Image (cartoon, rainbow over all chains, first blue to last red):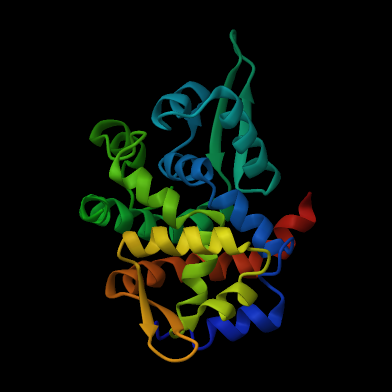
Length: 123
Length: 123
């Protein structure tokens, strides 16, 4: 059905790549979480400050923002930079690996953005 | 940082596309959920029966499989086909819209699959 993927089903079954608790599942859970996606898209432009992220990712709590940023930082997708000013300033940006990930995330998010109104209108 | 996306941040802020409760957020939550991604990837090959999905999506409960399939069906991504045999046979497949979505999902999942071991090894 999707040509470049000859046997996704067999691959999922055989390789153990998608077994519960394996690295692929762990990283997918981080990236494809409700907030992970939105934060990665928000950072796709340029380094962004905490307060900006808080505003742009509508509905996120301070706790979830902190937690999701920590997870994405631990995975090496996000870089946290503290500038010693008064008050101190904290910028978040994508790492090289985060940029590679987001390049593959944006076409999906763009497709969803374009088609979502019709999809939600169905139900 | 990512060239094709001139101002993701401004777009998120201005358009209201990513506001809490808007269609984009609703559909992203369906698609990017832990189980949504795995079910869509499993279906990318060919029509698949309930029992196969249950096996291939390691760790999913019957309840979550039923619920996620219903959501993806309501969104028009998945088609449910009942064949009147004894016992009745139920196949799930991607619709045209589901195929378009999965085409954009697979490059992301492939990237994560390739890089996940190194990413998880970091922490």
